[in-house]
Amino acid sequence: MDYNVIDQSKEITILELLDRVLNKGVILTGDIVISVADIDLVYLGVKLMLSSVETMEQLKAGKATGVDRLIS
Amino acid sequence: MTIIMSENKILFSTGSLDGLSNEISKVSKDEESRLKLTPDNAGSGLAKLVLTLIELIRKLIEKQAMRRVDGGLLSEEEIERLGETLMKLEMKMEELKKHFNLTDRDLNINLGPLGELM
Amino acid sequence: MEMIIYSIIALKTGPGQLNTVLNGMKGVSGNGLYAVTFNEIAAVVSDIGNIDFITDKSVAIEYAGVIEALYQQFTLIPMRFGSIMGSTCPIIRMLERNYSEIQKNLQKVDNKFEFGLKVICNSETLKTELQSITAKDTSTVTITSSETKNSIYRDYVNKKLQEHRLEDLLLGYVDSVITDITRNLDRLNAINKFKRMLTASIMVDSVFLLDKWRKDDLIEAVGDIQDHYPRLKFVMTGPWPPYNFVEITIK
Image 1: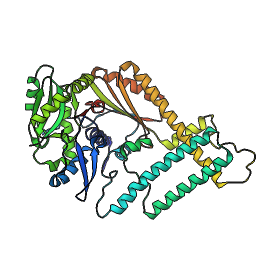
Image 2: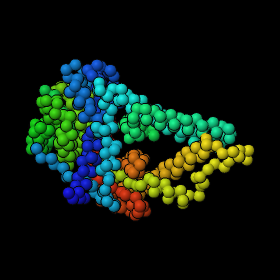
Image 3: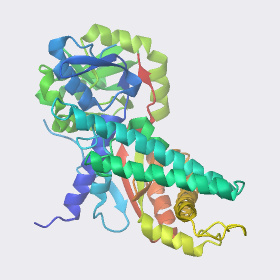
Image 4: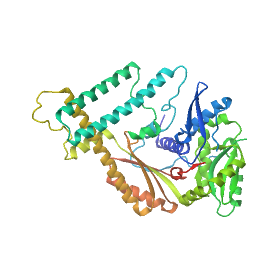
């Protein structure tokens, strides 16, 4: 397979894009409880928030256990 | 839905792009750099976290010690003692890594803002 | 029904133009886009039904595509992926609460683009080069006369000291490159941000915010700089929506 410059450019573009849309941009504050194995462990002020994809995973896991949501 | 964006945002680059995407991936907050605690890996996951933090502190201590030595105001004896302590710290770290079967790569957890101390 | 917010737009001539544009576009999962307005700003949103799918990176790329399309035509501040709110009322309240901060940031990025520049190096080669051209002795600290016995601890310190000095040399070099870049971009009236040694290879990671019409000047300026550093690799990307220059956290 010829992994050429065009493919490389696309790949780098996607990486740069994801870095921006997942880690930069404006954040909505809220408060998050992080649970491990369904046990609420850590109350996290959103200034320490991880990437948005992770937050959504927490939301997904937490929907059943009433985790606070990312809304103001 | 059409994604209306150019697939290539690279304006120019000097030299080849080989290996660049690998480098950039290293710093993205993705799967590998995230710490996931599950019932199965809780023990080793915790060890990874603790050792990463210890290693961070050790490196900071080492850096600061070198600044002192470079400053030229320490006595020979002080430098000797510093060397002995630092060496033993590093050896201990190697021991711990071996004990938990972790490599330097494993300890490369994204520490977020803490990571910028290094 | 939750809504995902893509960005906040400056409504310069009223909401008409925005609505027209949004009618011709789709959001993630093919849902329609619409504007939630408050005074002279509007949040661009779409409904999201099932929150599960949102953990997929391809959705993030789709989301970014919407922002990309919008920023070609409007002044906006992009939201981070995952900005979700319950319904239009809280969104309007949010816009109202943060109105002045939002306006300030919209003004800051008005008619400007963001560009990224990464400078790539080979740290090991670079350190070796720096060591040989520098006058400073990076080998050992002079051992005072009283100590004649061989000490493994002393050797250890010397080794670490050399590493430390090399690292300082490297960082000094990185700073000089950054100073050079800053100086060359001075006439472009840009806001610059730099990160040093992101990895062993990514020596400089920088982003610039500058007027749209200066794009060609920027490319020329960076081209000039890279002539000074034939052994470093310069990779420039852009233009981007101003992700790196919207430093507000919305309450």
